Length: 59
Image (cartoon, rainbow, N blue to C red):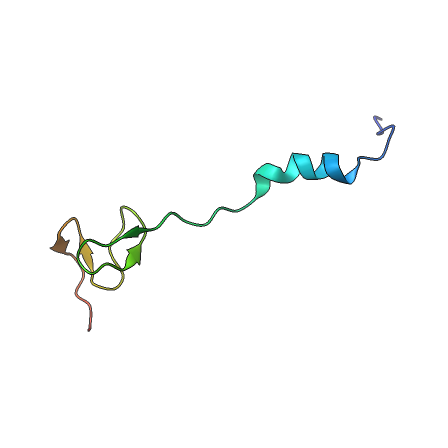
């Protein structure tokens, strides 16, 4: 059975884990109301998508 010959150092371990981080979502502004929203999604505040109202919201 294969066993490591030496202990993996903290820097070597951390270099391997650099790509496991979680990135924040990319947000864009809604052209109708100016609120932040996810791209290619309906705006949660005004309910518009691609210039037209898709979901009725209570204001």
